[in-house]
Structure formats: structure tokens, C-alpha cells
Length: 396
Image (cartoon, rainbow, N blue to C red; front, side, top):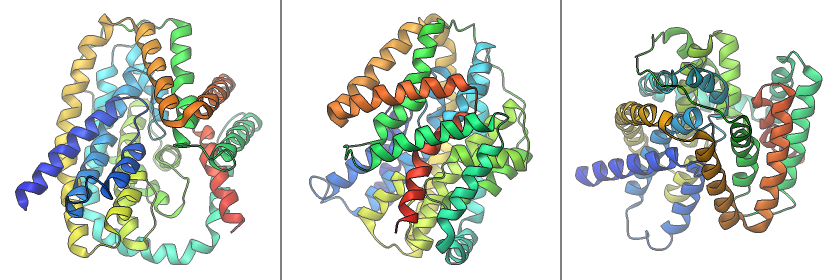
């Protein structure tokens, strides 16, 4: 059994590396695919091994997905905030440092999560029982709070409302297959790629030096903010990172550490939340619930061990891959690479979400370009998820 578990971890790390590097291939998509296969060709594989594979893949993804976000400017919903500080460092020849900062944040998060996991289960269970009836009002308060952080509050409200309305249409009456793919790809991915092509960005020679790592304050901010995602559906690591940055104010490099830690902690807490309150906050947790159903203390212990092992391995993988990207990126025609990535995303959306998805991709891309032009934080575009969730809870 030990050999099979180790094999499942290694395969999960490999799969997480692929999903992290390929723009548009989100962990949620792979999780849904595995759930569908688990009732068919994967039926003979014990559910424990599938769960180990999914957990290892999900944790690895939280490390690796910063590489395309920083080097290619093509994030998923968990790394959209890395674009601005990451690209600024990339243009200074410090793209490698930017990725390494997120990797150290994620590694620190893995260690902390391992230590606090079992006490956190009891805390999540206690606090959820206390606040579950006021979840939509907490989401409203959080949304207002994030909007009021902006200098241009009116424009932030416009961005939140516009993307929220678009998200509501996509997630409800249109009934798309994989609706988040065209929605989030347009808002956060293709819009940024188009700007890269338009501006004809040239990447300077990258210098591979180890950045100065100061973990204490960024990690404190991440630990305080990340558990919010366990209670509040629709609240992602981007918003948690903004809140964490208010708790422990950081410069650009410190913010990348905080964002890496938050991204990984949110994923880890999603598994703890599944055990504590049977609620899923990430696609990976949904897949685990569908495959395994309820699980015991022993299974939770196994998941924590898998998180620790895959996190440590992923840290060193991230360093190696970031080093390769850093060496090669200057030699690549960046506008051409952005064009190829944009074409790949468009084809992917067309295959998985049909012509309706392609239409949504176009609309969300235009919306994303407009929102970027306003100068407000891109986290306000997460209204595309928050507003539909708020409406859902208020109409229950």
C-alpha cells in the first residue's frame, strides 16, 4: 500500500506541474474530469489512491501556477494579483526572484498548515456553526470593504458590479459547460495577453539571484486571512491576500511571499473544511468529496502527510522550472509567445465550452480590458464570483 500511495503522490505532482504550467488548465477542470472518470474507467482504482493523487496535484498546482502568471502574464483566478508585482520584477530582470518569493511563501504555508491542521479543524467547525446564517451579509461586508480600499471607489464599484453581472449571467441562465473557463480566462488571462501583444513587451536578461526572504510578516498576514475562505464561499486567495496585506503591510516582494502562502493555505484549508463542516471551497475539495464522501481521522492524517510531501517536492520543482524559464524567456519572441498562448486558450474554450463559451470569452476579455484601464485592483473583478454567490445565498 505504501508503494501505491507514493506512486499516486508522484503522479499527482506530475499532473499538478502540467496543470500549473499550461494556461487555462485549472485544477477545477481536472478535478471534474477525474470525478467523471471515477465512475467509469477508474472505478477499479481504490478511492484512497485517487484522493492522494488529487491532493498532491492540487498542492503542486499552487506552487507551479505562479510561473506562467509571472513569466507569461496568464494567471488563473488564484494568481491574478501576481501579475502586477511579478511583471514589474520580470521587466527588471528579476522574474526568477519573483517566482522564488512565491515558492518560499508556499513552502512556509505547507509547514504551518501541517502544524495547525488538527486544531484548525475544531476551530473551523466551531466558527462555522456561529456564522453560517449570516454568510451572505459577511460576503457583502467583505466586498464593500475591498471596494473602499480603492482610491477611486466609484470605479471599483463599477468594476465589481459589471463583472458580477457578467458572472451571474454566465453561471446561471446560460448553462454553459465549464462556465468559469471562458469567464476567468477572459477577465484575467486573455485581456493581459492582448495588452502584452499590443505593447510589444521585450523581456530583459534575467538575473538568477536568490532574493532576500523575510517570512514573518507575510506569513502572519496569510495565516490570519486564509481561513476566511473556509467560511465564505466565493472568496478566493486573491481577496484573502489583499486582506492579509492590510494585516501585515508589505512591499512588492513581501506581497509575493504573502500571495504564495495564501494561495497554498487556501487550498489546504479547503480539505480541512471538507472534513470539519462537509463544505467544499475548491474544485479539488469537490472532487475529493465526490470520490470519497465522508472520511475518517486516518484519511485526514494521510491527506496532511500528502500535502507535506508534495509541498516540499514542489518547492524544488518550482525552483528548477523557474530557472529554466529565466534562462529562456529573453530568447523568446514575447509578443509571439503571447499570441500562441492566446490562440491556445481560445481553442481550449471552444472545445470545452462550445461557441457559447467563445462568445463569453470575447465579452469577458473586452470587460477585462476595460477594467484594467480603470486602474483599480484586479481583485475587484472577482465580483464575477462574489456577486452570484451573494445572490444565491440571499435567495435561499
